[in-house]
Length: 247
Image (cartoon, rainbow, N blue to C red):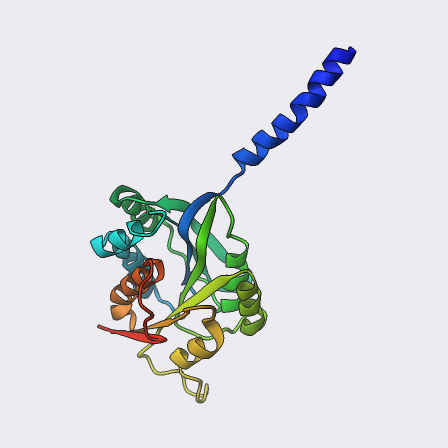
């Protein structure tokens, strides 16, 4: 290579590196919102359908779309995955930028089309660990929020508190949607801590974190719509630590 060619290549190298950095720049959004949905064996097929339908319906609600578009930036990034055992999470809807009724409808359709699968155990900690690895993929939110919905306590994987601490150290706000099962527990299990108390004490955390409680899966659609609107609203007044939805 001639001296001039070497010099030209050396001068071009910084421009190539700069172009690479620009290409990898994260797009700013108001919120990076992760929706994490329980598909353990305690959630039967009908209840799982209620969950998926509830999330899809929420993104078709004009009130949610208005809240989504009214932030300083005017957009959010959202993704959707299911979880069960400590090592089983399915990333069903990739990160999408939502800034219009059309993009919200596309996200709802992606949820509609996602496969429904049921697994065994309930690993809230596994869901938290998986969610922590999803942030920073194409978007940079002024807030990072994970929305964990489930109907049982952690019975697989590491301790929930440790997983929550790792998320809080990333600046993630952990909100919960606890679905109260009206079916009595099988004989011999003994008394268990009420699920809403468990979520309040061990799952949610971070500035402004809150818990939505659905009184049975029949209340899920109402609960998840109210919850997401509150999560993405800009400069909303502080709400209660625990909200409840009925029927």
